[in-house]
Amino acid sequence: MNFDGAPADLGRIARMMERLTPRGPDHGGSYSDGALGLGHRRLSIIDLSVRANQPMVDQCLGLALVFNGTIYNYPDLRAQLCDLGYGFFSGGDTEVILKAWHAWGEDCVARLDGMFAFALWDANRRVLFLARDRFGIKPLYWTRDAHRLRFASNTQALLAGGEVDTELDAVALHHLFTLHAVVPAPRTVLKGVRKLEPAHWLRIDAEGREQGACYWRLNATRERVARRESDWVAAVYDQLMQAVRKRLEIADVPVGVLLSGGLDSSLLVALLAEAGARDLMTFSVGFEDTPEEAGSEFLYSDQVVARYGTRHHRFLVPNAEVLRRLPEAVDAMAEPMFGQDAVAFYLLAEQVSREIKVVQSGQGADEVFGGYFWYPRIAAETQGSAVDRLRRHYFDRDHDEYLRLVTAPYAGDDYTEALLAAKLAEPDADEIIDAVLRLDVTTLIVDDPVKRVDNMTMAWGLEARVPFLDHHLVELAARCPPGLRLQDDGKFLLKQVARGRLPDAVIDRPKGYFPMPALKYVRGEFLDFMRDILHSQSCRERGLYRRTMIDELLDAPDQHHTRIQGSKLWQLALLEYWLQRLAGQGI
Image 1 (tube, rainbow, N blue to C red):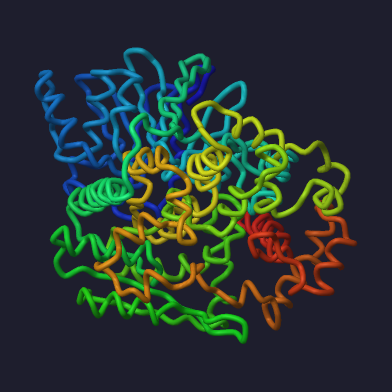
Image 2: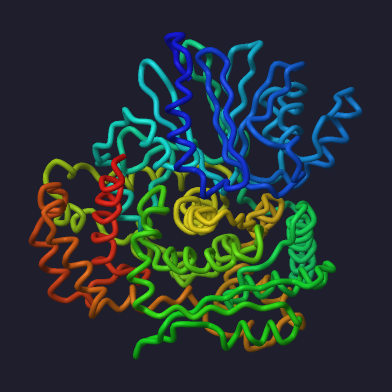
């Protein structure tokens, strides 16, 4: 969108769309209206006909839309809009957004139940309206200067459009290395690239004037009338079943499950079977073992498959394949991702996409229902501020260590403490642990597991749906006493729902993390790979890291882990490698 009235550059839009083709392999299209241009790559899931192609234009209403995601309550909204006199030329959810904007304006976003990022051009009012779902499940990046604004689903597309400031953002770097790659919106590690915050909308007029707002906030206070434990279990079951069912039914293609062997994805299989899913396809991936850790959870996933008779697909990836395919996975990252399972999801999604277009995934369950080991530790703390208690058990580095990591141009104040202290102090949280759990599910999760799953699956044209982040379910859990959520080493309510539906061995097993031992216990070829990156000329010329810290980590790579067991060496190498891959692609 050009603010000086210059015509939209469709050639630039085409270059940006090329970077988005893996996310939308089924159709590409563009639209322009003077200074405004839109491009879209489609993954066809609802209304597979050409009528639902995008950009979708309603000439009668003077509206055009590009949209990524799924609106699960679109049939209900469509019925409401029909009652208001609107007619429809397509059968999917995209057109419902167009009519909802015309009927309700900015208030339309709060009516949407789903995962979404969209941009809507109102030619009559000459305004562009951007919006993102409550948990940022779908990405929306943007860049602007005095003359224009551009937006896209990933950083690579924005950079392909040119004229983006790629200097490193010192504040974002502090977040990145403190919160294991989480950089809360609106920042990214690149100064010129920003992202729309979850649960927010942004309106820009033809002259570039902006107005934005938050349309949803999570209340983490107790209900006035206390429920019994059995009532909480029943309520969670009911909401989770609704979340699973609508993510099954709102699709015109089959829906499968990414089955890790943990409680969360296993419970999805059980509930999908209960909801009447037939010929359910499930998918699991495993890696080579190390002396310290098994590389797969097939022992557990096989039990779920046996109980429910799913059409199962199992993939075992050798370590040599992980290292060989690592560059591709890094290229798919819209932002640097430290989580070791990013590569695992990338390789799994490749295989799954050959069989199916949509899967349900268990992301969000640990954050919503208190499944991580650090939550009880934070809840048990009695000394210090809320951010102090979080830091002791969650931060990858304290501020003084960060200052020993980066060179002077990137040093500064403790930006992460300041940001999180403000967020933890926001109203409507009864206890510190309520505020911590709310922070995790509304902010931290967005830029760690949620972004990771979206990037790695959509790199292969595979849509991942996350029922544990259904906002009705999250709102219910947030009102629940934290002691009940954290009972029995966490996720007590989910374990109670699962009892009798899953083998006890799956329910009572120790908490597992997507195992990828080769990137956790760094040695051999993987260590050589990281050493080469950190000793490279590009790394030295960038001048981000202090060489003394690099040497310290390389001297004992297995001895330097974060409080939540991430490899500090891998974090440094991954960021540098991501930056090198961006430069190597010529963007």
